[in-house]
Image (tube, rainbow, N blue to C red):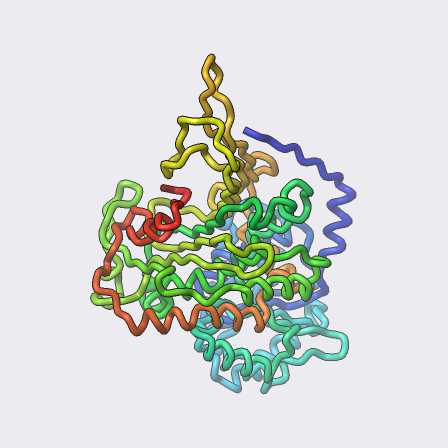
Length: 512
């Protein structure tokens, strides 16, 4: 196994922290009674506090419709402790929790927003936060417009002369191209585009960000990152869990809207984009947009949809999707989707990209697999790989979760008097090289939003570009109901049609 030693001087760390520390501000979380705030957002903010990356003049205000003012701070403290990496007697914890506040209002209540504005002004005076605001919309999509409209109406959307206001909006951002455009138009009536941070938590993962570092920070990979050397690219986002009680949400979303249109397209853009001139947000955005606009419209015959039935996962019997709570017993919602796409540009012409995502699959696994072309002449005979072809191809795998790292597979001679070849793997693991991390991915995104750095956030052009790809496919699927749902057992790797999608090209999924 390959190992890595990492040495960073304390002086360098301190310099980086000083450069990354944002201005004084208040983080206002709408929908703070939800699970996301307790499990992810508050733990992430406290991790930033532990690292010395939050300003001293800082506060958090949770906003929701239920009155939780008596228990909110305590609940958030419990969430921080469960979030990992925090001791109960951490001296920073009490001071941080003392700055956590709660405000009750309905999201369509003008008087409530007027009172919220007054409360934030009082906290500015108390903590010295200078009118800087980061609003986080951790709410259902139907509340986005109401909240943003009232922020504008009650003069909370536009900053003062020496202050800033930014708004983080959770996904899903629309459910098709038309709804995404309408929502963008509504939001842009109140906020300038540089105030809007459309969040995709996948981009907070270190291993996703590392795709760009791996490609553009190492001279040995970029020269072969093209159609001349690469046979195919596979991106998998597999989950062993089901929908976890989110029946009403998943019935509207399905695997395509929930994962493919956003998470998978973002990862694909990092894999396929051209080298940017710089790592500024505007430059990265342009290169990502070029990738999405170069993708051919999906062909129906190059897509697969599936829905899980009963099965066995991790040795436990589980029910099928149609038996899940608050799910239509005749549901046509896909819990698995796979597709083959082509990027029609000079770098990638002729290289198929295979993408799949699903619930209740064999194991939790999110990774990018780059399969390189085989040698032009097979001089070593008699060896086959898992898919039945001679000579195991070189495969580069970037594991996004859960076993974060990078591996490279190549052939090596087996010791002995005959020439036998076996595949071997060089393996890099983040935990081995850098130690285990308690970060949940939101730390980087929250910090960047406070700093005004939109590099890891979606722009309206990108949102609309990816919806333009998926909306025609979703419309075709809606017009052609599936008669064989459920069509894969829970605990498998999805429907047989997914394997057939690659088999007709003489390929197979890496997990086959």
